[in-house]
Image 1: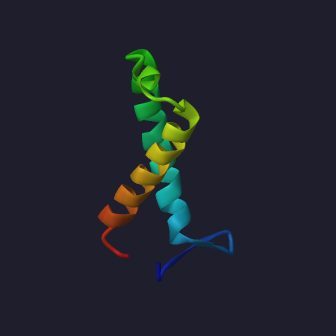
Image 2: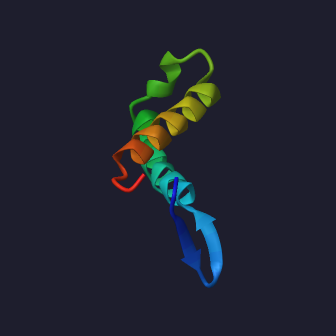
Amino acid sequence: MRHEISVLGLMFPSLLLCAGLAGLLWFLVDWAMLRLKGWTLFWHPPLARLALFFVLLGAVAAAYPDF
């Protein structure tokens, strides 16, 4: 992560942008899993949700071309 994002003079790591995008994707996938009752397949749904966020964060960070 070489780049930083400047917002009103404050410097934020670029991972924050990736985490925000992963959070949006997580909400969409979580909503779909709730509608399809997919979380009932997991023994510990909160842990599965956390793991899903980190998987999405890794996918977004890998797809971001400037890392």
